[in-house]
Length: 580
Image (tube, rainbow, N blue to C red):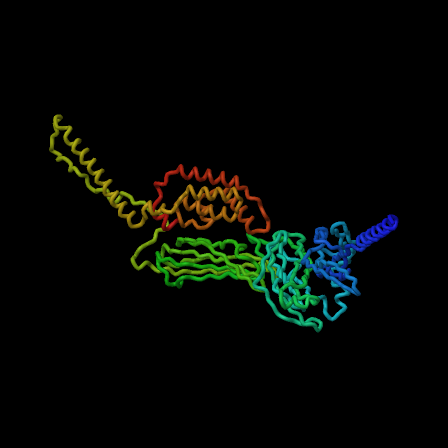
């Protein structure tokens, strides 16, 4: 009896062990793909399946070396056939290859299970599997083109990117940003949407245009951009109705190589300006034949360049003519983006005050630039202008240089004391009287003369010179110097230039110093001019030069110390109104 029971227990244990071993044999992890040949801008689906009852998820990090993971979704299915049930779980991963060539989907792990690796062939062009059908290159693909593959440094290149799709796409559309080493890139306008027909198939199109300005010569790579979205999943009958979840779809653009040429050696302009077109125009606030002495007339000059931004355009050189006092206003820049490229503009205004009547000749204004269409250097010119200056209606003459009143007109023509008669006999006892009286009268005359001169100077100053407190109001030299010093230490070139102008205005107490050139002329320092020439070259030209900010702080500090040590008593009030 005992042997019978022991025999039955043994059979049961063997059966259970077999079931356990069979379940372990059946539990497996498999990996499959929907295709093994594709183009680098196409996507594929990797399906990872296990029949193990587990709540864990496979580790996908090994895929990130050669692929972009665009999306992951999972499903669980149970099938019962003749009373026998089986179940499995799937993870569907949408992948986009990062490069072309022979790629390997590595082995993936889940718990103690491992899948087999899969080899792929990724080509730079469309795969034969996709081009064979009437659908073209797939449900979504990208085509790109550039306006010029061999541009000059800082010349604008237009990148046109067109995304074609022939399936419904949800609103989760995304495009990776355009980042290019050694170039400035920006999108032009808004994304255009339209439809077109390719090889008999109708496609929707998203078109984007980008402006690219290479900043250094040599080989430059425009990287591929990845477009991703979700499309309805045909296997999910209710997904497209009750939710926005769907099958991820993606496309990647091909890389483009540019050969950027350096600035031509024969270009003679002070700043390298490659543009498709450049115009130079001017306007006046009043007719040039109706100007009177002392009247202010404003000249506005506009430079507009196709293919350059406003900050790339240097200051306009306007020579100062004789017989006119000039007061430049602050310049402004602006950009207008269109599908054909960037149009940058620079606007400069200057107030002119004639100081004498007659004809005043304004020299021509020249602006050198390089025509990228004709590959030639050109000069935009505003012809010379003539201003007919009429006399002032009040008979006033505007001084172009300060004048100091003299005492010559105030001297009396006759002595105060009359001479003594010829027959007068002066005794030794009264010899001290007349010299004493003469000295007293001479002293009184000097005091009177000094009082008259002070009265006349006070009258002139009250008419022509603003008060010292009003002239210096609003200037904080110490604070302006600290701002300039901080900008130099931070190597912020634009802030250095702006804070230098503000500091010079505060140091000189002269608000008319609104340009860098006027500030440099006020110091008359060749070393300072050389440093700012490096600064301008670093900002605008293709030949970058490192600015020695420590030397700039030291030099300006010495100029500041020298200026504060000088007396400003000889400055005349006309300097603030009509600087020479």
